[in-house]
Each structure stands twice: as C-alpha cells, then as structure tokens.
Image (tube, rainbow, N blue to C red):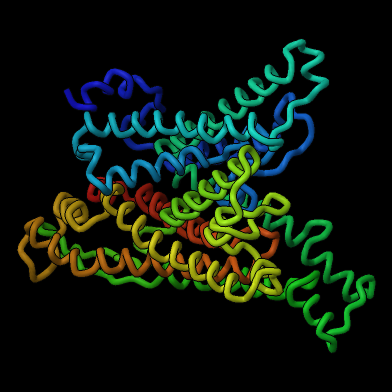
Length: 474
C-alpha cells in the first residue's frame, strides 16, 4: 500500500472552502476580496491576550515579506503557508509525491497534503516562538488572574497564533476561489503598503524629515561629508526615495517585456490573438519562497543560539542579529548600513553579498521552474490549454505536441532568465534601502503583485462585458 492510500482518509477530510458553482460575478469577487482585506487589517490589530510586553521579532526584516504583525494573532503571517509550499515544491520537483495534478483525486490529495503541512509548519514555527527565548513573553498578571501559571499562559498564546494562522490559510483560500488574485499576494501588498505610507507620511517619515530640514529644525550642511551622508542615507533618505521609485519603474517595464506568440482560431476565420510569454513569466511569487527559505534558516539560527549557544564558526550574535560565523554569511543584506561602513572586514562583507546574490539568483531560477510546472504554466500544459480553447499557431498543425515544441523554444529559457533577474533586482533593492524601512524584496513583490492584480481585474471586467470570451478561454 502506497502513501496515497494510507493518507487518503485523512487528507480528503481536510476542511476547505467550497468551490463556487459556475461563474462568480466580478462585483461579488471584488466584495469577497475587500471583505477579506478588511478582516486581515482587523486581525493584525488584535493583540495576543496574555502577552507580557513586546519581545523580539524572530522574522525581523523578513516581516514585510511574510506579512502578519508581531505581537498580534497574525504573528506567523503567511510563513507556514509559504514554508509548506517550499516543501511541496521540492518534493514535487524531485518526483517524490507521485501525484498527477490533472487527476481530480490527486488534486484533492495535493490540497489536503498542503493543508496538513501548513498545520505542521504552524507547530514547528509557533512553538519555539512561544516557549523558546523571550520572543513572546507571557504576562505574570494574566497567569495570576487566571490561576494557570506561566506555562498555561504560553499555551494560551500558542493557541491564539495557531488560530490566527489557520484563519490566514482559509482567507487565502477564499480569495483564490471567490475573489481576485491570491490571498498571499494581497496580504503582502497590505503589509508593505501600510509601512510605505507610514514611511512617507508618518511622524518621522520622509516628508516630515524634509519639512524639518527646510525649516531649519534639522541643521544639515550639504557641503560636508556628514551633511551629504545625512541627506542621502540619513534623515534625508534621498537614496531610499530613488530606489523606491526605480523599483516601480523597473518592475513595470519588466512586466511589459514579453514575447508574443501569434494565435488564430481553428474554426472562426479572422479570430486572432496572442499568447504572451513575459520576461517575468513565473511572476515574482517564487521569490517569496526563496526569501522564506532564508527566513527559516535565520529563524533556526536565532532559536539555536538562544537555547543552546553556537560555536563561533557557526554563528556569533549581537542584539539578536548574526555578526559572524556561517549564519552571518547566509543572512541577506537588508539595508545600506549592513554593507556601507559595516564593522566587519571588506572581504567578509563582499563574501556575504556574493552568497546572498548567488542564493537569490540560483534559488529564483530553480523555484521559478518548479512554480511553472506545478502551476500548469509549462510548455505541455500551455499547449493543452491553447488546443482546448480552439486556437492554434498559424503555420503549424493543430496538434498539442507541435504547439508544445514551439512553446519549449521560449518558456523554459524565459522562466530561468526571469527568475534570476528578479533575484538580482531583490538583492540590489535591499542593498540600497527603501522608504519606510520595508525590504527591497517586499517592495519588489508589492509592485509586481499589484501590477498582476491590475491585469487580472482588467481581464475580469473584459470577461464580464463579453461572456463569449469567458466561454472561449474557460
């Protein structure tokens, strides 16, 4: 008996959001999306009951990518979902699952397995946060008032973040089935946008700082090196503003670069179309997987260091951050001060940048390939979709095998190049810094996901106006 037969009774009974029957009108999709977004913002402001002060955030600079809010019921954010996706991507890429996503039975098993892994990752991530170190300290007053002791309050804290993570899982599923886009992307947009607005308009934000500089409340002399550094990297934040605007421009331009394969309808004369193979074909979602993998590595290092202590060659920590050893070189560059004027030797900083760049480029390309295959965006799946829609490539026989060979000229190469390019952009953006202290990767993801969401909304409106197109493209 294989693992599928053994696990089927459990995986098929995993609770799930009901699939809509038939077409969901655009207004209803928009309503579900906005409703879930409002619920997300509400939950990020629900403080954990029994929390005795604010401990350190184990996710640190990765918080903008993993969404959620430290100290709230959404403490874990989308971390467990993303980590479970990494495991599934790796298992699927190594052909260890033996699941055919075109088979309805295997689809149910795949979705059930993903939910089961999310539950496992909630426990693996949440339990150390509560019981190891002082990251989520339990309140002595609550322990005394409830009469359950510190241990009981810690279990109460874990129960709250467990429920919060489950809510995130089902909110993501609601948007995927009933809304527009994906919940994971929407939550990243929400978190980063909130930080970005605060970075521009907050009390210590960009505009407030420049108002103080112009009025003389902050004395800055641009003719001195200290004053120039203040304007560029300090309170002036001109480099961060330039990087923020540059990311917007580069991502929008990269999203518009594409190879368009001409299509014609096999039965309707004059009906033509184009299949776009974008430069960022796999979107930027695989980059979430790469950064989440780095976040989990750093998470492991901080937990091991706080509980067991690490030898110097493995990790030296100061203020909760690695400053030496292997975990230092595996930590990504998140801000200009981590490489400009760093206390480490120049060769150490250069090696850390090189490791980060290699990790992001190679990881971005690998996860982009896995993503394309599991999301049915590969040459074979795309050829079947074109064939089923009644379209064909002019000058070629209407045969899935022939269409697949044409797609193989473009999709694999563009997938690798796009994944590597996004990795380079993410590292560059992190090194230069951004407004609001959001990571460059977080801003990169936000702009790209927003652009993709705009395209999906435009497509939904087009389908709403022309129902025949919905029937043609499914």
